[in-house]
Amino acid sequence: MSYRDQQKYLEMLKKYERKFTRDEADQYKLYLKMHKDEEDFDSVTLKKLKDLYEKYYTPVDKSKFDVFFKKTGE
Image 1 (cartoon, rainbow, N blue to C red):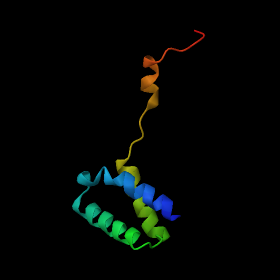
Image 2: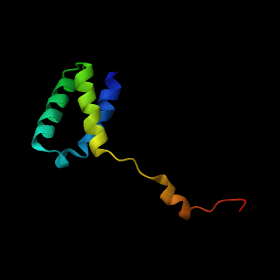
Image 3: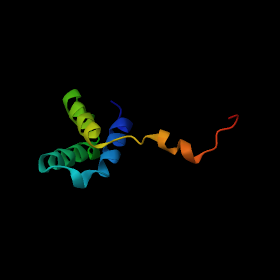
Image 4: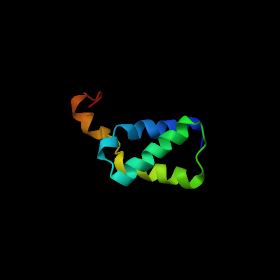
């Protein structure tokens, strides 16, 4: 995992930091500290970070916005 990918996951999780349980908050702070020290995450740490990301991040359903835009040719 590249440093940039780690940064992307950590920045996205920053929005959900107030929703974390106490254990998740402690883990997140540890990940931030590791990232600040410019350490590359090992596979186990990376998997935990991705799991945390998948638990809280839900992508926006863009199909809901189709009603606001006129489709040409119909």
